[in-house]
Length: 382
Image 1 (tube, one colour):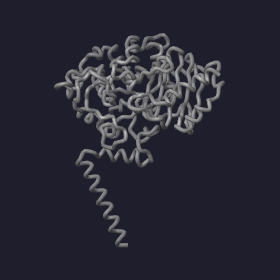
Image 2: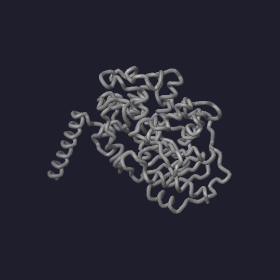
Image 3: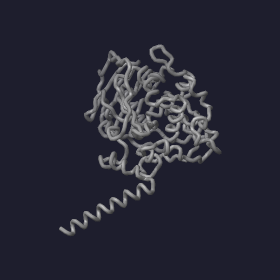
Image 4: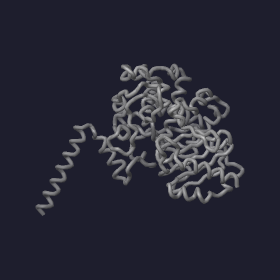
């Protein structure tokens, strides 16, 4: 009995020392990581982790349900697609043809209205909000200095950084895009209660606007610029600019760092569903128009889906870019294989949400990305 008491006492003291050390070394965000992710059996962020964090609700306006195609769900999944969906943990697979739902299926107890984490697909929305702020007169242009909005970035190389540099992933900061290291700034940003403080601590590594380097921190800084420029919370600006005008059918949630600081995790973390995510893909497919109204400038839309830098042919302004069998493709992309894939030439979109995908090398496209497209065409050609 005495041994047990001493053991428990030792454990309590050890835990107290560890917690104290985390606070002393400013790594106490790891406590939140343990509570929200690791104690739920995950090694990284997962599809329903929004339930563990603070969120802000984004309301709908007048819902505009997608029409069903005349051939709606007339085809079955190919054997290859079924195998991939099962092995990768797909939760939603939707084919939209000529702006109508051609095929849809849901898995793992998810349905058409189930919420799941967008992860980095949110970056495409934030880039669009930047353009909306330009159109609304809050931001002068893509060339306006970030320093005009964020005074922490007014010295040295940082003074040359522009709003467009943030949207095209060319800030030149020392951001380290490492998802699985508990000590990376990416992990800190995901769990820290004061995201603004984390971002303002970034340093410059190279000259901005010279080359592409994927960095979630660029999108987070861009969100801070937009909030400062508009005087509006990003989730509210998103609601009025896109979610309501595009006829979303479901209220959505956007994770924030904490109730106190109320800053969205702009590089990720919109909780929604496949068909509502797809609306933004349609907006860009249709050159910024929705129901005949020009929501976004068509010139910006065209710029967004073309590469800015030679060393980054796969990325534009908030959108991923690919070639698939000689067809131009652009797409929204998120951690673990969240995709809204747009093939404008054929007026086709493929949306896939799920738990995993095959890893790509560097910033290349996942081999599963190509398979999701191939099998959609195989189904449509039957």
